[in-house]
Structures are given as structure tokens and as C-alpha cells.
Length: 408
Length: 154
Ligand SMILES: NC(=O)c1ccc[n+]([C@@H]2O[C@H](COP(=O)([O-])OP(=O)(O)OC[C@H]3O[C@@H](n4cnc5c(N)ncnc54)[C@H](O)[C@@H]3O)[C@@H](O)[C@H]2O)c1
Ligand SMILES: [Zn+2]
Ligand SMILES: [Zn+2]
Image (tube, rainbow over the protein chains, first blue to last red):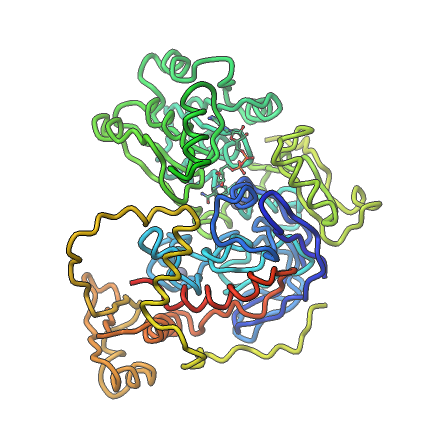
């Protein structure tokens, strides 16, 4: 079958690879109908996540059809259309039982690397390096899903792939960002980053009753999407974000600051130059400009909720602000299994629609182009989604509509 | 359709597979990988080294009573023939702590597999998945990485 593989730093290619087979009794095989790029992939692509190897199949945000189930699969059935959580849980360890699925004890078969790096191993993730379990990703015609009963969720009939695909990763991640922030009525929430994750964090905050959401980015088309969701926006190249946030919040600062940027934060001025040099020379592994800003901006006693991915150390982390302002700092890879059924149900009711994120439906063959558009944020690309079944000429017909006019 | 003749993985990992490298070597290589990746671990001050615990411990979502006495799982019984094994209730009724004395890499792998088997009924396999073209170095390095990472740091 065809699959999109990592072939080197900033290089991907479509290759012929063997088809997956069931390897465990609780596995299912999924025929992938839509598989999205994600900001997390950029950290892989750019070489900031160790243990990615040439030949690894990428992709972790996907939807598809169950084509085969192992003998110990009880709930999932062949023929079902399912959204699969990007992060793999077992459903039975203490962490999964407590809803902290991305901390699963049992789905990273090769935990030693992370144990050495961060003290403990966390859950396996599809297509996300050998440190994260070495699972083949979803940018392929078929993918194997372990513990299928707890990781694959049936999609309601009226929810198109173009929205359901994001119930795998971007939507639950955004939801978790607001949830960790404890967002409630009357809150002012600021969100750094208007990619799929930041936009969905803004949307979740509004659904949880936030009075106002302020979304920060520099790409006009992304800012416009955030406005479409109901957020106010700030372009950090035009305004001083810290000043603007104070003004917009009567001097208090946002109650909840959600960081949806991650370790390759862009920025302006000396801090940004400093971060780039230190990261390039490996004196720091992660660039934390947006993170610092979120901590600085947050009101006294507020919560900073970090969704952006970090793997190593961030330089100049303002611990003094966390301590003296009495901030709560929360973070994590998404615990998708905890939110996905609710999200799919809200999609069914029309309360959540994420399909506007899908700006570039492409056949899998165009994977390299999709990543280039997404990485460079060219042509208004927010998420490129690959449709392995379709072919270049018929890609439009085979894919869901690229934009959604559905009410939000 | 993907291949449907599916030789399902055995419920338990075969106990012993080619085990040339053991503990130290393994950790060194693993450490090297981490450092090469620009990871953090490197800069630790090294005064006289504090003594490391010789016990390897995991917590399992299981009733401690099921892990002791004559009906305890075979794997645990066999481990106990080679090592001191301690099973104690985790605080707050949160499962059982299994600690194994003088655990080498292979034993750590076995203990982890035991935990996974007890909790989920199977041990996840990642060998045999689709993969694209590997470099020659990559092809050689992957099984080594997996073996070391599976045995784990401690
Ligand atoms: N926690 C999780 O489980 C999880 C899941 C998915 C993605 N993520 C992470 O979330 C982050 C965002 O993912 P995405 O898919 O939306 O990525 P994306 O690349 O589409 O979006 C990132 C956005 O951040 C903006 N940005 C960069 N620097 C900024 C700054 N200083 N201030 C404000 N905005 C800035 C960029 O312009 C871009 O629009 C990534 O780090 C990704 O790895 C985490
Ligand atoms: Zn993702
Ligand atoms: Zn688990």
C-alpha cells in the first residue's frame, strides 16, 4: 500500500510499504478515509523530536472504516466508520481509569527513552517517533489500531469526515485546554496560536461559558477564522500583546491563558533571536516565547494551560511569575478518549463544527505538497487532509467539501 | 484488504531473545541516544554517586491477594524462583506494588510485560508494522533501540 513516510529532516515521501496486519488480539485494522497534518508533525519534520527514523509512517489524526477486528475486540464492528484518538490508551491502567489517557502505562512498548529523558514513559502515539512507542501512522491506506474498543469511536452518520477527522486530535486537545483552565462563565480567556488546536481551544472556552476569548496569531486568515468562532483577535506583529491584554482586561490580565503554539514559537525582537540561536546550538531544546508571554500575561491567581508540545528544556522560563503570582500551570498531551464521544455528539447536534479547518483536501500522493503548504502556512493552509483512497485527478470528488458554511 | 491470515501474537512475550547486551552497555547506548538528540540528561553534577536501589518496582491495577499465594500468575512464580519478589498493597487501595530485587534489563522487561498482561490481557507488539525504506544504519539501529528502550532505564 501507499504511505507517507518521514525520510529526513524536512523531507517526506510517499512510499510503497507492506499492509498492516493485526498484531494483538484487541487490534483493529482501519481503512483510512481522511488523515490530517497537525502542528505536532512539524516538530517531527523539523527534527526536534528525537528517535524519528527514515521509513517511519507519519500521521495521527484520522478517521476511517473498520475492516478487520482481532478476536478479543468486543465493541467495534467491521464496517463501522470511526474516529481514532491520536494517542493510544489501554483503558485499564490507573491513568486510563482516571481519565488521564495520554499518561497510559501500557501503550508505549519501548518506554526506556522517555524514562531517561523525562523520568517516566507516557502513552504511545500513532506515527510519532520511536520514543512514543514506534506505532505506524495514519497517512496510509490502512492503519492498525491497538486496544480498538477504547481508542476507536463510531462517528454519527450526519457528521462528515471533514469534521470527524478533527475529533481525533485538534478538537479534544482544544477542549482539554479549556477544561484544564477550568474555564467558566464570566472568564476572559486568551489563546496563543490560531492553528487547529488554538481555534478549538477558543471554541471550547466559549462553549464553557467564557465571557470573552482573545486569540493571538499573525496570519490574517487564521485570525479571521478565530473571529468566525466568536473570538476577538490580536496580531502579535502589530500590537504589543502584553499591553493589549492588560487594556482589554481592565488591567487584570486574562483569567485563563491557553498556549497552543509549542516549542517552535515564532516571535519578534531580541527574545526570538535569542531563542533561535540557543535552540540551533542545542543550548535549549525548545523555544518558549509564547509560553513565557502567557505566564507573564496571566492574571494573579490565574491558570496557564499549555497545549503546545515541548520535549526538553525551555530557557528563561519565568518561574518567578508562576510563584509570585500564584499561578496554576497545567499541561499534557490530550486525553482524547475522555472527550471524543461528547465531541462527536456535539458535532451531530451541530454545536461543534471543525470542518472549516480543512483548507486543503489532497490525495495521499500529494502528501509532500500538503506538508509544505502547512509548514509554510502558504495558500491559507490550516490543515491539509489526505484521502488515501483518492487519486490526484479525482481528489475533489472523493473528498469532503473543503469549507463549511454550517452554523456554529 | 490487508492480509487477513493473522498470526496473532502470543499472549506473553517469549521470555528470552538474543540478549548480548546487558544493563550497563544498554544504558550507555540509551544515554548516548538521548544526548545525541540534544536532550537534557547530560549536565548532571557527579559527586560521589548515591547508591541506587537494587529493586525494580511497578504498580499494577490488581488485587494484591491475586498476586500472592499459590494461585499467583505463573510469570510471577517463575520470577520468584530467580529473584526476591515483594508484593505489597499500594496505598489507598490503588492496586499492588510488585518489586523485584536485582532486576537486570531482561527482568525489567518481563516485569513490565507482566503488568501489561495482568492489566490488559495482552502485551503490545510493534514489530511487523508497515515501514518505508530504512537507511542501512536505521535498519541496524532499530532493533537495538527497541531492545534497550524495552528494558528501560531505571
Ligand atoms: N497537547 C496535545 O495533545 C496536542 C495535540 C495536538 C497538537 N498539539 C500542539 O499544539 C501546538 C499547535 O498545534 P496546531 O496544529 O494548531 O499547529 P499550527 O502550526 O497549525 O499552529 C500554530 C500557530 O501558532 C502561531 N504562533 C507561532 N508563534 C506564536 C506566538 N509567539 N504567539 C502566538 N501565536 C504564535 C503560528 O502562527 C500558528 O498559526 C503544537 O505545538 C502542537 O504540537 C498538542
Ligand atoms: Zn496532533
Ligand atoms: Zn492505560
